Image (cartoon, rainbow, N blue to C red; front, side, top):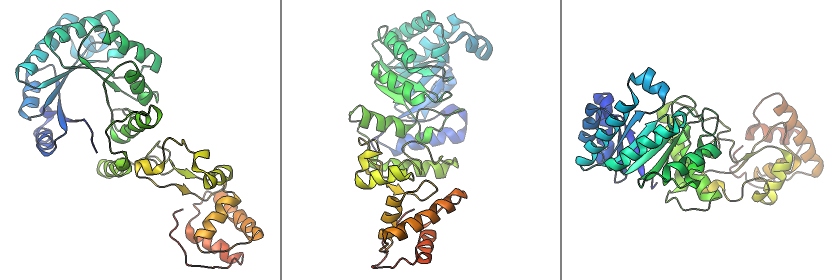
Length: 347
């Protein structure tokens, strides 16, 4: 699809994960990245997996330094610099992350960034590890970081408050070059910024070319849903079953006339490999029912459309899904005649 970097895993984690990262690195022309703490064994495992990029990280917030790492600020800076130097000496591209950056003392964060910049890191990733940033604050942080490094900037955002994609976009607005995203938002706790949301926002709202083949987004989402065993909610933006579905009579009538009336306009279902659907339920109006009856091969009168619409509304009000079979049964019971062969209809 044209994804620029695949962070394939944490090679030191286990033999199985090491082999998975190595297999991915050898199977794609896309840049692959391996994750590593600022620990020699982690970095060596990442390098041995033959990824082109090593992403090394260390906690920089006081709560994580003291209660997770059981270290000091000075030790954090020393380990960070040594790890960057080790990766660069091996000839790999280096990305460095000050983990929990958005809960880190700003002066210390800048000290760490300046130190790893001097050590030669290619990328600095700013992670909102616990999802506490807001777009305005995150934008200001990235602007501040940019003023203290000549490394390229990457952002990594979490969705604890539903702001992951918004924060990632704010980072790009502030001058970051790249965002770390995950398909269907899958990630720790509430997840990460969604691949599909971020890509389509950049393409459609910012009118920028990501280089991604967006027409395969639905295909990719479905693969990840199947393999991960994590169902995608129907109301998930871009890839949910309801993303391009219309039930409300006002919405459906408008979309039948012109899809731009109740869709973004700058993003169509075809752009992501989806299909527009007019679904039947308690909010369905006569315009939608008439459209569906015609596609099913019926030729209803205005009175018959109203009768079938009432049946659809009543059936939907009982929290039951109205299928094509249901619609045809309602039409036949209302005495609607068929005039031509039924077309394939998705409801």
